[in-house]
Image 1 (cartoon, rainbow, N blue to C red):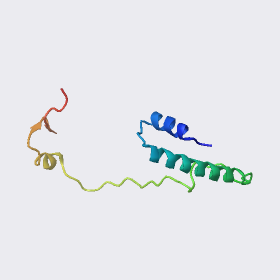
Image 2: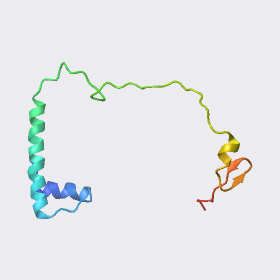
Image 3: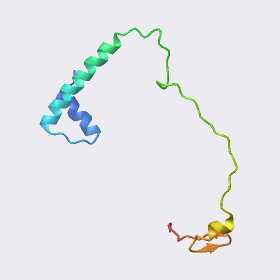
Image 4: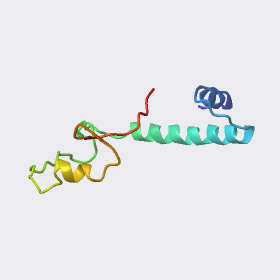
Amino acid sequence: MFTEKDVKYIASLSRIHLNEEQTAQFSKDLEKILSYVKKLEQLDVSDVKPTSHVLPLKNVYRNDEIKPSLTQEQALKFSVEQHNGSFKVPKVIE
């Protein structure tokens, strides 16, 4: 059973500030959640296989295809400054 003292302790660990009304409400809410978990514990899950995800997952890969793109000269045409064939940008780390 969750007491208001438990809720205050959990809130302090979480760095959450609760007023007395919120503490009382969370105490009731957590008690409801625990009673639901107790119901779930009564289910027979012996035929249920363990899973890491509820949906079947698979990686979807696509083939790499070479497509037309800008040449180095075309790309550098849009830059404000260039240096040795590369974009020159302002230093952001000191």
